[in-house]
Each structure stands twice: as structure tokens, then as C-alpha cells.
Length: 106
View 1: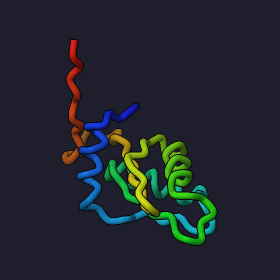
View 2: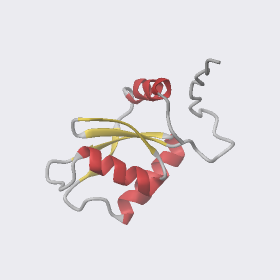
View 3: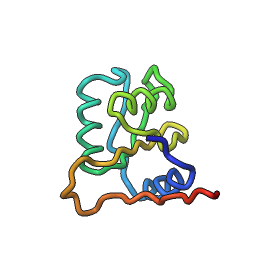
């Protein structure tokens, strides 16, 4: 799943209003953190994380590693914060994020 620039822009604007729920510290990315991020992505679809100063990974490295582990997409990385997106698998979720569809020119 590759996001278009319009979809990234839409997700960035939605991410402005959410709180940071994932914190990556000196222990790095362990199985507990992956499980927590996976559960949060399933419930919310869009999550914000932060890499603390004592972490050995850069924000970009941490975001990409966590995205790979949770099968999600990195929306943006700014400073020590990053945003991940993954559509939910639950059909009954009422407030799903509907991404804009870009029209291709012929």
C-alpha cells in the first residue's frame, strides 16, 4: 500500500489533533511496543509516536522499523515525532478514515 501525496497530506492534517501514544526509549523497539502499536493501529488507524533522547535509533529509523513490524505506512517524520497509518481490518468500525482517491489523467 503506497500512499499518494494527497493521501499523506490528508493524514498529516488528521494527525495534528491526536496525542502521542507511543514512546520509544533506550530499550528500542521490542515485542511489547510492537504489540501496543499494533493494537493502537487496529483501534485508531492513525497513531503518533515519539523517540526519546536516550534511544539509539533516529526518528526515521524507528518509524520505518515500527512500520515494518506492524505492516503500516510512515506518514511523516518531524523532529522526534512520527505518524503511522494502517487501515483497520474491522468492517464494523463506524469512524473509519476514508482516504481521498486521486484521479488519473488519460
